Structures are given as C-alpha cells and as structure tokens.
Length: 156
Image 1: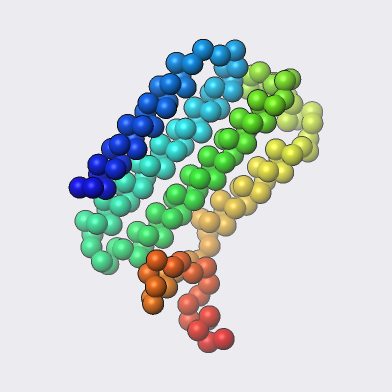
Image 2: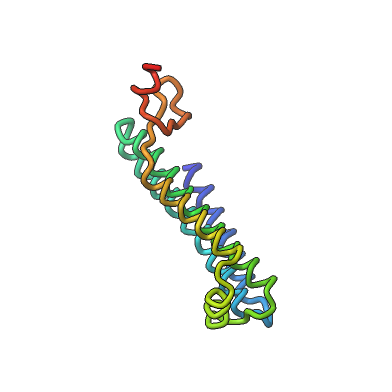
C-alpha cells in the first residue's frame, strides 16, 4: 500500500511539472519540447518501476531476483535516455543557431563531429552494455548486483 501511495504521489508531482512546463510561455518552443520529452522519460521510469514492483510482490520470492535485475536495467536505461534528452536540451539552449528540429539536424550534419555526438555515442554504448550485460544477485548479500559470473569469481 505504501509503495502505491508513493508511486501515486510521484506521478502526481510529475504531472504537475509537465503541466507547468507545457503552460510556460517561451520563445524557445523546440527547447521546451526537448525538456518535455525528458520529463516524459522520467514519468515512464516511475511507471515502469511501479509495474515491476507490483509484479515482483505478487509473484513472490521466485520472481524477486529477476524482478530486481529487470527493475535496475529499466531504471538505468530510462536514466541514460533522460541524460541524452537533457544533453540535447543543454546543447540546443546554448547554441543560438538552433531553433527547430530541422536546424538541429542541419547543425549536426554541418558541425559533425561535435561534443554532443561524442556524448550521444557514449550514452548509447552505456545503454547497450546495461541491456546486454550478464548480471547476477549476490547470494550472500541480495542488495548487491554482480556484473560477473558468480561461479567464476569464487574460483579465483
């Protein structure tokens, strides 16, 4: 019950932030759209965590380990996607030549490579690593996630 109440309050606050940003009068419409996309990613992270948490609690102990790993992967993926969106927001906000999507794409093509492309590359590599890495839960300490084979690390 507490989990659902905390999730509901987080969603309520997220909705307030989205409404406040959407209602804000600004000349930088493209910037506002990027910021809204970033906030939507945070809301999706909250919703996915609630759904995974409800699934894990209803399925019992058997699903706990898989649920923890899935929850951490989903949360990390949304966090890095949020980082990409906020990076784009900062890049667009600090580059006066960009006021629309078309200008953003044109700038990316004409100024290739640039710092945002390198940042984007690193973030995408990180997301791919998070999704495809082999992780396990430490049997002695369930709050610890291991990124190597537990059998292999115990042999050394």
